[in-house]
Amino acid sequence: MKAYVLLLIYFLLLSNFSKAQFSPSFEDAGMWNTLSVDYAISKKTALLFTEELRLNENYTRLNLLYTNIGIEHNINKHFKTSLVYRFINKYNEDNFFEFRHRLMWDITAKQKISRFTFAYRHRLQVEYRNIMTSETGFVPEWYSRHKVDISYQLSKKATPYVSAETRYQLYDPRRVISQDKLHRIRFQAGLDYKLNKFSKVGVYYLVQRVFNVANIENIYITGLEYSISLKDSPLFKKKKKSSKN
Image (cartoon, rainbow, N blue to C red; front, side):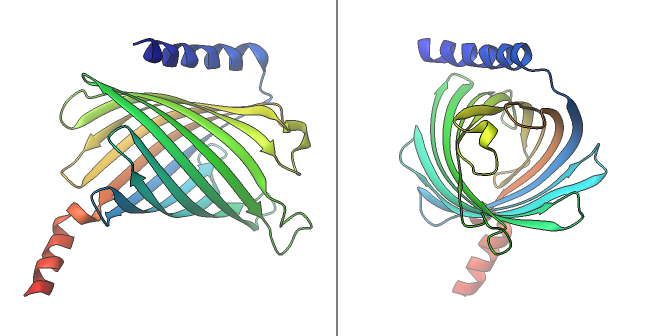
């Protein structure tokens, strides 16, 4: 039980730290819309695919589009790991797209107690941007991200949750001011609703605080999510049966 008390303390410390240490000079609101698809190739391993569109400047301007392709493996009921490649189209202020390539390695641990589920995820992230058009295009950015999540099974279909995430800059030649520093905190609260055995929808609200950078900011995000597991969907099962016939 001590471990779960520590998770709650972690939330409180992050909240107080971000409020007491920094006074953001820029604020914005946006929206993130996500479609996630997985396909189980075995009982423990699944292929992952995600598309996301993000808006900023008070929901009026395209911020970025990204595509995730990866693989996830459940080691046991408490631990899983994944490796994901992300292709990013970042829409800049000059109205041109900036192309980025990101590789993410996640390790997640979780424990369920009664209706509560406590989870911790560490992500090691490396990213390249403007490889062919920038002098630093082949120089990678490295980040370490820590996320804790507490969810509660309200019913068979509804699961509310809260989470907090930090991002620590290991190396980035474009942000020397943030070198070897914590520079971003996210707080999130949401609700996942299971539509059926193979799909669910989610809605959440996320607050992102950025500091130790040239432009300090707060961003308030409304998010919508839809997830589907192809292996369990009736459409896939019908095709599988018809192929046998």
